[in-house]
Length: 167
Image 1: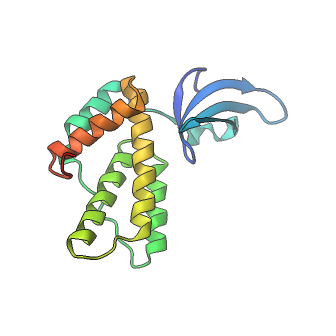
Image 2: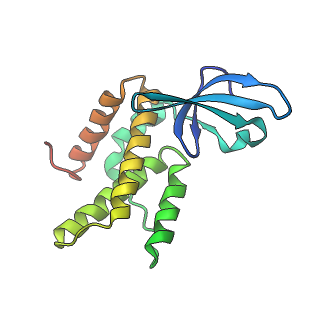
């Protein structure tokens, strides 16, 4: 079980902080999710606590950043883009390293489409944005830095890997 103050990955919200526990007819974990400047209080059933998992450690975060260039894109493809989008959204529920892999995969697919003078699929953009948000949140918690600093570290890793241009 988790302890108060611990950061966990909620399958739908991303990084949350355990704030309290409530007894009652159905025991609940009180979580706080932060999205942008807003904070949201969530009640999560203790009976489903196995679906929550701890954020990566600082060492794991550093290793992922250092090894970013060797992180492989996810090769999953499906003829139906809706099923493909569902697969990648499912991967986001797992936290890092999968959120980082999905962001890298979507960025690669967006770049490939643009290089072939095609408009990238709108689902690529949606999934990339969510994968990036979740990655930045989890890396910020793991590294003990602001989201801006975590985003800068991840951006620098992508630049060093030759994945994006340094702007």
